[in-house]
Image: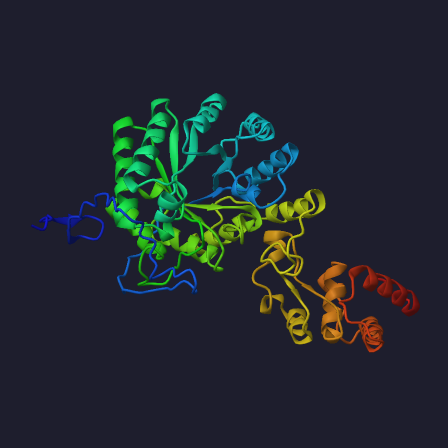
Length: 463
């Protein structure tokens, strides 16, 4: 007989609702790999059932960082000095309200542990230093030895991982994971459970029952247990009415309503395999997840993680405030990566790429010359110390040349040159001659600077 559920009043919307059902572990004999959605020899499918999830953004949302964990899985490891410097920058970027709440570290090598100790010596409240371990008792010993207050634990949740990688049943995997969680709790360490591959997992047959057990343990031990929903392969979608396990809002709803995980304990960790890392992370916020896990410049496994700098500006757009974050540090970090670490940021990367606010079209340059708001996303000089620029080429026109001179030399408004200036006309003629002789590349700033200085001397002008 089907279980009768009580009718209860929802005090947040003052509507009567059916009591949430209890989902129990479905310990299946064969793995459910959702072959209808993920036919490996075809492109994955996005299916819909038009079940709508209500918006439910928490009052307080924040960012966490995995630059030193997931971010180091796809590049040469950082030196200890580089880690400490980046950690200092993250502290400044997050501001006095700790908008970058945590940063997670590996503990496996001596270098990793040295970096942890040196960052701890900084004494910052934020970002809080946390670790990441596999669900093994040997890894847990590392956490205890260092004295961490919280650690992430890998608890892969899809049948792809449980059956094919771990060679376990769902029941065996759950019992194993819970034993390591209990070890954490017994020593007073707060576990953060990383539900790897949640967008290919059986949400109600495994994920919800497992998280329900985690919440029961939290009540028993009176120690917070966080849940990180990991879109490991980037399969998540934010489309209204899409089916789970691909629906981001569906996953968040299930964890909140069916498993009883509170928003402040819930975190989203996205990957960018299908170009959806940022939109999925923002969706997680909007539908009830307080925390979004990110990596600087999106550096991470395969196509990368959700870029930290992107979520800074997503937060500002959603909340109407930066809440103390210093966005100019984003530019400092980008320069540090390029000049010290030697990492080349792709030039068209939003907010940090060399060309993110540079225009090449002459008609755009003409608009910028009249009012930069026409072709600039916001005051990039104020928020990122990056004034809008025009690159000079054969398509820039007089407006592009004038704009380049005004911005490159930071001329005050009463000294700025116009399209009719003899200097601008001469410089455009010289640029045009370069391209008529076969040039195909954009003029460099150094080249243009030399040409301007020579022209000013000939024209008896001073900028």
